[in-house]
Length: 373
Image (cartoon, rainbow, N blue to C red; front, side, top):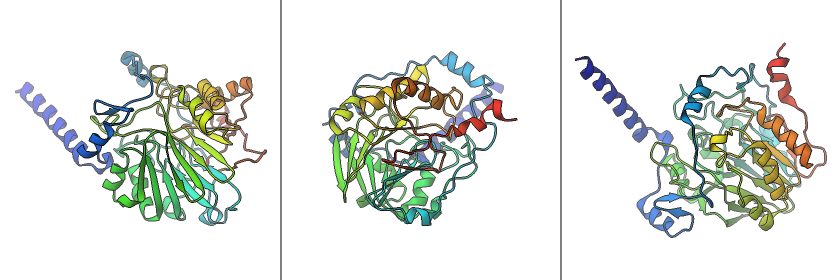
């Protein structure tokens, strides 16, 4: 009887999880059969999956990962709430049309104002990058620089891939009434449509395809990563980086990516860049082909011919096992060695593209263990 009871409980758990995966809107919608037929004609789509330019396996040592998960690491998260810079909608609306400005909202989310247009990049403005509110790492800061409800009209939303820390269901639902156009890699638009975004507002692109939006050129460029929101949809939608070129300013956004030859390809074809927004955190040797290591971030910025680097994918959530400040410290050490200028804005602090005076304060120092007292 005990064995039957345990089997019944396990069966109920499996059924509950399956129903959640099927019916929860958080997971979006995978590409249709018709879309898959079209994707099959592409070089970067094989056997029903999108692929990287070069093989990129994750060589995970599960025993080591288990030990890391149970290890009491005192500096994996800040010990106190991170204070952020507040931004108001009036300031955003009154931004000088001749000035290109970036506001980092933590992790990989940005508000870019360029050529008089407002572009929101990878809008993850939720509390946790997880489909379940009770699970997942919590945001380091209690507040956002600006609540979604207070954002003005956003002309463009750009998305790099469909992982929960980049494509947030709650943020998209709140944003959809105040966004003009969405630009995404192939297949990702299905999630948006499932969540109520009008199909005519969505443009999907493959690597190296471009689109013009007023005076701004957007190029969907390669990244070395993967996609997927559920248990069985890995690599069914594309992932990418972006080139954003305005009248006078040229910006690169890495999305998530391991180091590879695509950085030099992009730099040769579309560089030099005035600023590059580059992943530097949530890395591990076991998945370094899919998430770049900090020292490689510097080399990638050099490959891109970038004049200035703004490190991203850190400062908001703990998604790996390193200390939360390791990414930025390692970045600065390598940048000093290779003479790469780096800007380190506080969350919510504006960065004026092209300005010789950019934020360099080591603001995270006040949140480290040794400075708590």
